[in-house]
Length: 350
Ligand code: AMP
Ligand code: MG
Image 1 (cartoon, rainbow, N blue to C red):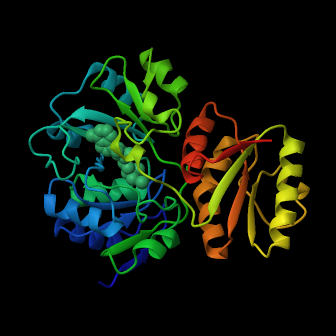
Image 2 (image 1 turned 45 degrees about the vertical axis):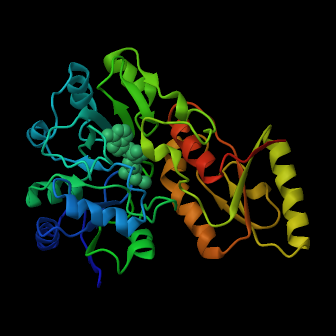
């Protein structure tokens, strides 16, 4: 398959591009498009054959359901059995935005889109290109991250092209995304609501709107093989760079010294080594391929760079990656959730 790649400005959208992409979606094809979180790989959520193509293109396990993207609440209503009060409050506050809600699904949503579940995950993205595509096509768009399953999520059109070129119909290039980390998934079929995947919207932000919020225990630490997280996708290997990634916990200078020593040893053995530093420590590393993931004074910068840094080490073909660890509160919880998975929970105390 020849993948069409078309660019558009975000603030001056090329409607010809949107029209072409809309035609593809209505014909049951696949289009990758930017959202504010990561790039999504979209197809018609109500067409079981179309959503099946997404699983094939990504190599995604068939029990890992897709998130359905809508442009307004009117489009949501026919997809769900009911809209609980907590959902209304959260939607008012955070939609369009990086929050996905789990509802009881209506009969028109095929179980092929929901991985066999009776619930459906729905989000209204806050990105002009995504909203324009949903509105123009009038399609509720099922769209997981537009990467090969298991790899770091895509934050640029180039990342999508690297993974899926030749496998999908079209990529809309709207530049680098703003947030860089996936949506927070909140189950509103239960009371209190429960976070199934941490994301850009933090527990505290949700609690300010609906009071108590719980967190699915299965996502807090390393998962045992028989754990059943409520978001099925959380049990799979995810976000992983090609090289083994190890994270180091400890006081700043001690961590830097420890990594510097390991890098020296590794280089002596002929290894190519990647280091994930922060702006605060970047200049303290003596050797190796050092990339700063952002500044510790601004978690947003770390979220934005996270996946691109992991992919850059893939491009450089490093043998191992050593990383500092980051604060585990607020947005840091989502950052560490992704990094720990990328590292297969390999964390050493210094
Ligand atoms: P992705 O779009 O690639 O970020 O993955 C979507 C995530 O949403 C996966 O972790 C899924 O398991 C989760 N998800 C989608 N639908 C549901 C649902 N009905 N119930 C629970 N989790 C869901
Ligand atoms: Mg994904």
